[in-house]
Length: 509
Image (cartoon, rainbow, N blue to C red; front, side, top):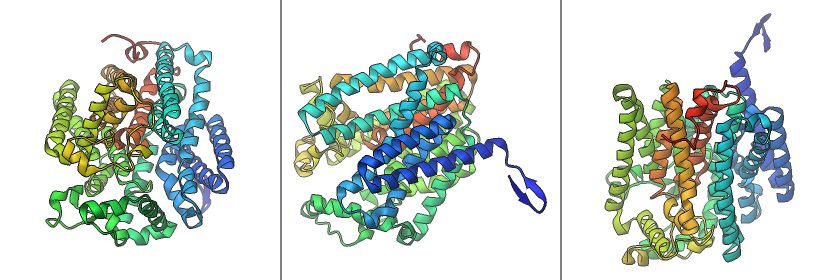
């Protein structure tokens, strides 16, 4: 509180607490990236200890810390870009948020082993399911390390466990301390929207304020060194001239609008990744809409359109339609409509894209490899971030009707890496969606219906998009918000009763 003209200004307790959590979250990611800039071992140790200490002292701040690490990390890294000497340093600094996530997850996992928590049958069953899924992923991590490059295996281990860890952090935190996300999501959405319009209007002038332009240049230089743009020149005749060539794109990111509509500056957001940023905007906006707030969603929608991420846009539209249909026709009709819409969207994308679409070619490669080896190759084989796909020949892939290695499709990559056991990942998502649906039917809380629609939409998008599953601001953020909603109604702060029983993951319908 502050003295102003002899009087005292009192912040509402909930707002004061949220602002404290946001401040801690911002400090955590700034200190973490700064520690990594000094040295990698020091960065890992300092980040882990600081994050663990913060959630130990103030457990309810965990969700804010995780969201801030996903949203703000690369913006902080950009400040250090002029002083980054090597690509390895650049990569390791961008791993700070995973260290934060694992530290927070480790603290809540330890808390979940306490008798008070395990006495709740719903929570106990969720822990058993989590251990089972984690064990499967660990087996395929070991297989990937033995058969391929450890770095590739670790990257995809991180991609798979991040959304799982997000869900369990949120579930355990909200089941022990009831968490109200309204103010936190509003602040995050407001920041994301404001950042987007500033980047859209002032472009490189805005990014240069915190060396964001240098961050983009460094990222492009890495691509040049890898031969990406030389290959693009050979295959398409495209010549990279300046930053504007990379940062501008066709309207809605579709070639059909080239020359028809003016090109747009494809904003990347504070995380410097357009698709992930679009998912973050869509999830924040839709969550606020489900909670009855409409101003920020209306402001976010033009940004989502401009970015042109079709997966994020489809997810947002489905969430909007589900929100409206629930009020008009009931939740069962809305749920059925979303499932049908997702099936139609995937089928149309495959039919329209055909053998000219990289995502479809990557999906077909995954299906082909799964049939030949249903056990799986191990983590790190295939995928956009794997070294196994660097020399992929897209012209040959188009002629053959499938890529030589699965990529651009999270579903295709998962069934290639984990084989039949990839059902453990999708099975966990099914159990989370089912538990939220049952809790929603009992309580009527729309914020429990939100993750049901979100998980279904993102799962559909994962068939033709890696970012839907593997970007922390897509599935990770969705499960973080969904885990809080579920934890709030199944937690130990509630008396035992029907809400807990209806959210049991192992019960029959």
